Image (tube, rainbow, N blue to C red):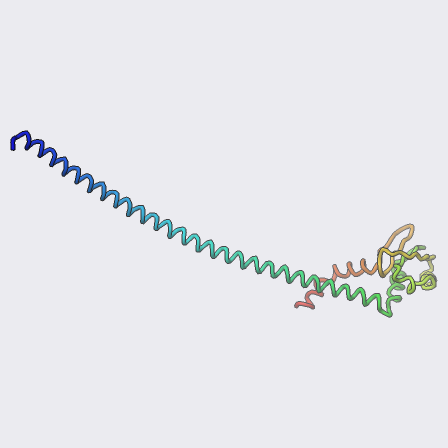
Length: 190
């Protein structure tokens, strides 16, 4: 082997060694980067899993709260319906009571302070007769007239030139309800 061939072979051999070394180093670096990337991906995956579990817990908690709120709303609707029924029954019992005429007489006596027209409901036309109104007028010493109207059921409206007083059964019960609804609810539900 001559010197020139030897130098070329040596250069080729050194080049091959350098190439092999560089390939090995590149593979090591690629493997290191791949390991680092996998570890980072695993960390991100774990973080996402923890976040998903947390979100699931939050979602369950919110769903449970929503169910509780909806149940409370349903309970309130039921209680409100029961209270409506209680006051509706009170209204019906008042209209049917044998003391209904006495109630009306007391309302006229207490609230009528001058000559007035007593407006009665069509429902009460046979109960609160013209004779009944004349008896009340005699007792309070004011001139009273009677007018029948169908816009309400039960109770009266006192109309005078100085004032109008709504004493319909609905108005009286609404007023009473505002004052005693909390007490009635406490009696019913403790």
